[in-house]
Image 1 (cartoon, rainbow, N blue to C red):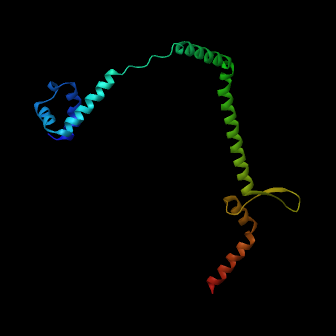
Image 2 (image 1 turned 90 degrees about the vertical axis):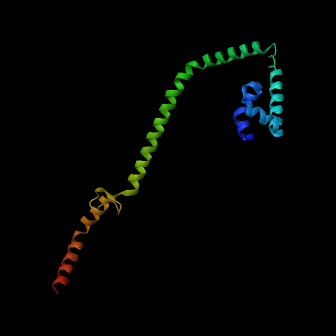
Image 3 (image 1 turned 120 degrees about the vertical axis):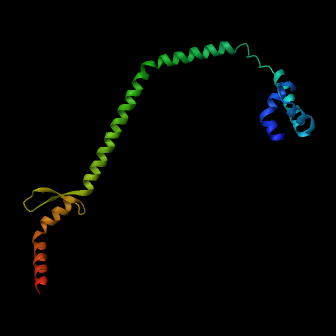
Length: 160
């Protein structure tokens, strides 16, 4: 039997008593000095654990614990009428901040892509930035005459 298998599978059973394991495991422990040393070390550890007793709490432990529990209960009841207000208040503040952030983002988007322009008659209109669909359509509309001349030039070059 290999030492590793004995340590993994049988060492706990060997500590219970020699009759708890097979004859092969008992013979291996008698013949292997490392496994015998390991078994002796485990036996000493278990003996120390059997002797150990949990320390008794101090005589004032229970009275201090009860006083602290009463103190925390009083603190919780004093803050109790505020505690129901905290959660809805925090949710409302979060919702307002979220709405404010979205509105600022949209306003920034509006000011980035659109500008206000006045024509000669004093009428204010929104001019979109180039590169946006609306801006491109406004550009094409504004320069329709110029583009029609390009079409005329293209037509002349194709007939030659």
